[in-house]
Length: 554
Ligand SMILES: CC(=O)N[C@H]1[C@@H](OP(=O)(O)O)O[C@H](CO)[C@@H](O)[C@@H]1O
Ligand SMILES: [Mg+2]
Image (tube, rainbow, N blue to C red; front, side):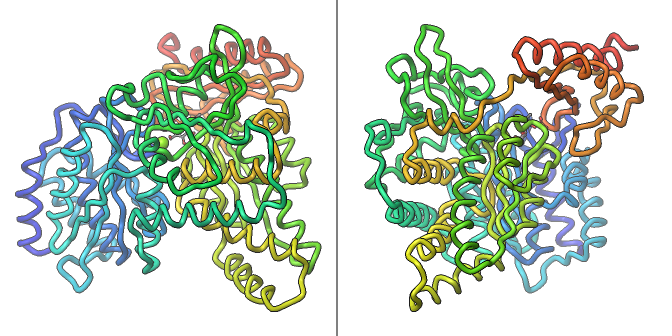
């Protein structure tokens, strides 16, 4: 790094001092904190994004969002060249950069890292970073901090793509790096074209009236705003959007959104008894996850939740049906894999296995699920909370494309032709970079129509086992080390044995604990044949965690 570059970094960094006492870490979903302390972090992530762009000689994304967190929080995360999450190898460097105490220290770190990674400044390739932000009021000034960070790297260019959902920015990065047009209007066109195709390939129309209207809770965030644009392009689906973030409609994520609905299992604000039985969906604050629900009759506003596991099951069933048609016709074996985490309801895993599907478990966090799903011709992954997508391998896609061309001039059966076209359209509709609530909702709608199913019929695919999640505050959550996709505790010694003893007291049960990646807690999960048993099991396991690690343990 030459003196000019060092000088530029020093000068810019001095305008973004790190607040005293703040220590921040690039967790499961980037950096997140109260927006008032984030300027220096976002500035430094701007530098990181520019370095990543120089290293990969590709366009990188920088998204400013705190997803489902309260409106006063914000956060920042990076999209790698494929549109996926920042490579895990760079996370420790992200932590070091964000926490470097002063500009001199920061420049030293950057210089050493650049040397180690063979990154040269001022070369032929100039860094380019696409910036996006959600609707949070703090987004605008944090975006300026990111821009300053990027501009402090010689030649680097920051392009503001405006207010976006997280998956839109990831999509743009992916398409830009493929040399394709990647404007927001291209994203909308792709979604609505793929949706229209899939609707046209439906053998028969579902005629019941519930099928007509979908009601969506937009979490008073960016998703509602964008869905307003998408819905205008869809002729065969009526969408009513509530909590769309319009003036006076309510506060972002306050009593609304996918996270609230999934955790509380009650209606989001703006929904009530008038909606009993109707098909409803809820997006989270940055529209990278979604769940479905229908309102139950009664005054307590309880809902029947259709979560990520059931969305996964619906997608898996549809894809399996299409592949069965292909396999039957020409014997081509396609490797379909399902990826879940230990939080997936046991009934969903049983259901998928009974369908004859291969199910893999990974640790919590989209980066792990996504990585695993890439190993298959078609990999479908979902977290129970509604984040997930369907990935098509490049080789399988090109096989499908060739097949599509051959079919046009051959005498193959109509069903086989349609299944090839359907799979190609699904790969266009569903976001290949990251889970995307807008495209996910549209795919659910197509499949329900294809199957002729109401939300109630979909929900009957299997019955969830009763489960309970608890959080335990401990002195040091890193003291818990897990193995086997977080299903077993390795450290502290004796804790797993204690959990085993509790689990042995019940039938049809399961329990595991792990340190959260986003909160300073140990999470406890328990599943059993009745709600009471699940509650009791979770409670006694939580007591063991507290005994081994809690504040009472010292
Ligand atoms: C049990 C649970 O829902 N955990 C969530 C939560 O992670 P934790 O590491 O459990 O805090 O936030 C992650 C990021 O949004 C999400 O990927 C994950 O599913
Ligand atoms: Mg989110």
